Image (tube, rainbow, N blue to C red; front, side, top):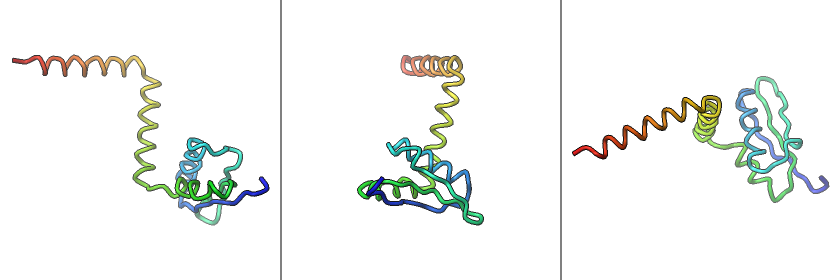
Length: 106
């Protein structure tokens, strides 16, 4: 990239750095432009991007911890449902039956 710029953030753990790295491709950034480097006890996530995308990349990299935790919980729930589709379908049917029964009480 001839007109590229570097956006980076330093994070305290490898897990946090990997989480930040994983959010960039979901937002449309190229995986091959993202790097994680170690600096002492911390980890730096950096990405080469065009100048007009730098602010957006930095916002993604410095996302809120609560937002990152919620996103990670959502991904884990989706993985669980994918791995256990019959169980998830059964639970959904049971919940639907329970709601139906509650709404038809007189």
